[in-house]
Each structure stands twice: as structure tokens, then as C-alpha cells.
Image (cartoon, rainbow, N blue to C red; front, side, top):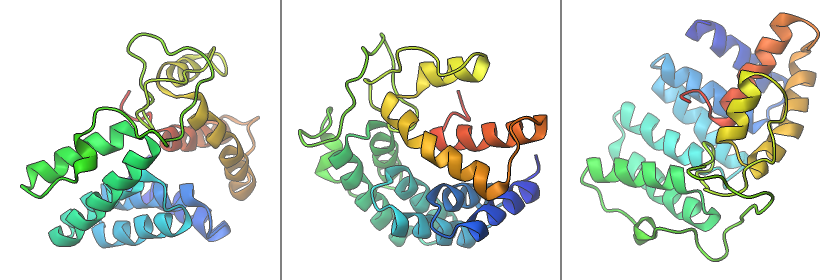
Length: 207
């Protein structure tokens, strides 16, 4: 799917539901891929207005600000994002934001120096984590699903790379995707669109 087609899809989604954080998040990524960096900044800021605890949005906001030649604001966004990620125990976004700050020779918050989530971080303990398991969305090494949520390659990918907490977050979001886009899962096109949003939400694009 071309960048323009993705942008049109996600614009339709946020138009149907301006409070849908996934729609704004996905639209921001599509704008970023299309090198529309100021538009991406606007979308990621909107995500954080809706959900100020979405640590990945801080990471992408920082990157988009830097791409828009707004480095000072980018440093501020990543600094805030590291503190949120630390509070939640979101290791992967925390590490990536800290690495980005270091690459800019910018100060790195002390929260990025710890190797484990904070004591108050939300954790998921359902099931035992397998050796080497790490959730692609939140970065936690625990909470692996007990089995794939459905058959096929995508089900196996979710099982191997998504924790139960992030999977539970997707379920109501998936319902919103179906309702707001009028998707029919009985059609191949509808199922493909649904799967695309699911992969986007769970951040499985690169695995």
C-alpha cells in the first residue's frame, strides 16, 4: 500500500473518531513515512493529549521533531518520554529514546540508567515468559500469551512478540477499527485492513 493510500485510510479513521489514539498514531507514522514531518508532529502530540502514557508516541514525536529541524523540542519530548517509559516499565521505548539522546550528545535522564522497570510499574504476570521473550510494543520480558491467539503466521508472530497486556489493549481497539472503518472480516480486503491495523498497534512491522 502506498504512503498516500495509508494516509487516506488513517485520515478516515481519525475523522470518524477524533479520540482514537491508534488512528492518530498510525496517521502520524504514515505522515512520517511520507516525509510530512510537521503533520506527523501534530498527530503524535494529539496521541499524547488522548493518552499521555503512550511511551512509543514520545519516541516518534521526538524523531519527527528532529526531522522537522526542531532538535531542542525533540530532546524535550524524548526526555519526557523516558520518564513515562520508566514509570510504566516500557523498556524498549526507553532504551531507544535514550540511545537517540546519546546520538545527539544530549543529556540522558537518570531514569534511563536503570536496567529494570520501576517498582511501581504495571506488569503482567499471566503465563510464564519464554527464554528471550520480549514484547515488541512495551519491551517487557514477561507476560507472554499462553498460546497463539489464532492460527497462522500472524498468530504465531503475536505469540512470539506480544505480551498479554498489550494483546488485551488491542481487543477493544480492534472493535473500534471494525466499526469506524466499516470493515467486513468476511472479505479478504476487510481482513487485510484489520490485520494491518493490528500489526501497527502491536508494533510488529519489523519482526
